Length: 124
Image 1 (cartoon, rainbow, N blue to C red):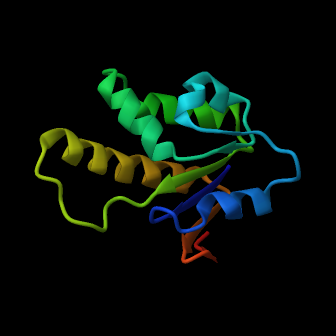
Image 2 (tube, rainbow, N blue to C red; image 1 turned 60 degrees about the vertical axis):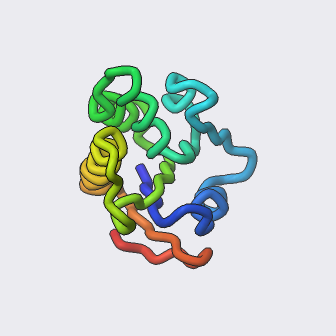
């Protein structure tokens, strides 16, 4: 698994496609969570976490299942912990959950990148 993180609209998806071979399948939350298990690229994993929390499901269970069923997936996720702390409880829980699950996934990833201004930096 490859994890790509960075701020919003910094070029994570474009970089993910450079790592993947041509004509690879990319999915987003709107495509449904089950699609992630067979996709080559999962874009916006932070949105998966948001939706799962709203549905009362444990996003860590989903993250574990994704890594197990799709070990070669490339995952992009926004880095959401560097900004202003949200005042709402739900937003704070989401922000913390994204951070903790990103750490969980980075520990298990073969490679980890951070993309800023379209420039990828390999962290692992």
